[in-house]
Image 1: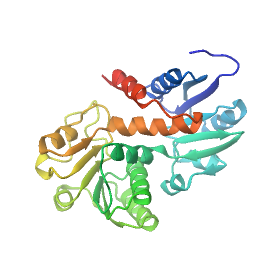
Image 2: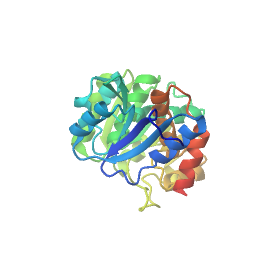
Image 3: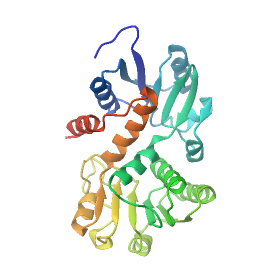
Image 4: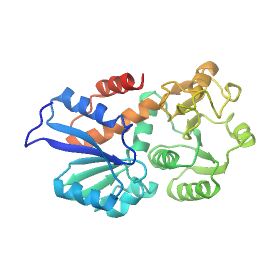
Length: 283
């Protein structure tokens, strides 16, 4: 990788950021295509000053991670309509000093589902969780696909109520939301066409756990776990045992990063190189 006076800089901002895989996969992608770009990580506490620095330094693209995805919205010049509905932004594009915000999490999930050959038309999908990932996926799938029904099961009552009400106002399909417990899982999972898991359950270092037992799954369903550490979660193992089609969380991570890459560079992302680098780091 060459660094000179013409190098365009991209970055991830958050707190913490030391664990981020984004520098590895984006720099590998820039190298693969021979682009004079580099990607760095900045630990940011003072968000407003950091955003002013993005403008002043001409940083061309930014990934925004925890805890700044919501607060950054108020500091931008424009926000994509889907990201506005979601209420959070994880991608910034610097257009000659004007900052535009997008949310690539839901788009990454949608692309991962499409790449798996799953047709969502007329389908009933259950989303487990009501946090940021669930919010992005619910709005994106509800707005972009002809789903029949979205059921959201969450454990934080206020968060769940707000998400359910917000999504039901914004999307054309039917939206149901209930507290996540054994009873609601048994009531909604058997009749669903797909299950999208958006909670930390099963994530390293607490691997080996799953909200959904194999007995609740059917071979005609798809199961998508947004957790990507470990690469194959207990939920994915249960889905495989039940004969379901399954999608690992790494696919969402790679596709959301590819969406960012393409916004910043105007080039098609080298998905295989990005996937290979992520797998090497995770393994």
